[in-house]
Image (cartoon, rainbow, N blue to C red; front, side):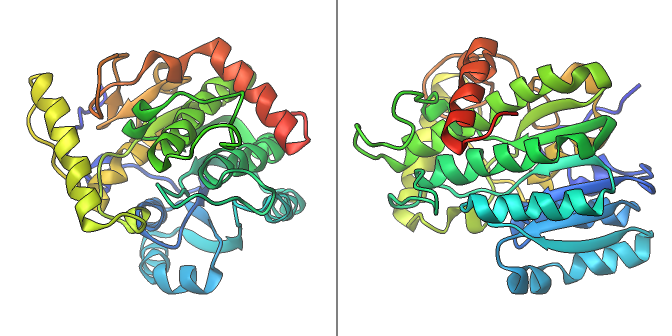
Length: 321
């Protein structure tokens, strides 16, 4: 019987006793925060981890503890260059991984950006949709056949998906006024819908995909927010929690925040989580309701919406998968 974990579980607790020798993992965003912690704990349990990062010099400095954990645990760690805001960089990274030809057991799409001022990626997409979704959409699909039978894809979504469904008519805010939180919500909904559609395409060979909400954690992801904005966001979450009869919001530590990722990747039953959305080391319930709180909105798991997003994404990036 699988041990029960929850909101306060840490990565070390989730993977206690788990042997990952012979497991190869790709983790995006290994230059700070959750990505570094995810890579550390996987390598500490013997996994061979490939970390992808835009700034390799920064990533080298940030992952000293990952390399130490790999040496102690019998795993390995290496870095590859990846700028998700540039499809040329994404394709170059995918080409390098394909040329290497070694298979992955796990792919963890961890990297992302949250609530920046309006901007565009190198290819002209709104920054959050282009980085959080389209960059990963191209990378993962280009290396999909490197994910061995029985492997898993874990996409980091967020309770922020509750801010907005995807807008397939105006994904780049060309017709509507930009709101950083609406844009973030769209991108996080897209992360969940991508997992739904990817899971449908690859589950026949045992490859399952899921989306996870790590919880609220103080990391570099919040670098675009002022202290006042953070306080206002927490106040709005607390109000939603109070209305739902829930306790006040509490920030997680980084090891607690990365726990659901490694739970979904290595511990949870693959059949149970395939095409689902997970939080606090369990599968989330489908829930409507205002505000940022637990559960997943129905639109973030809608199969027809997932397929429509897939088609729109192919159109935008100019590739069919």
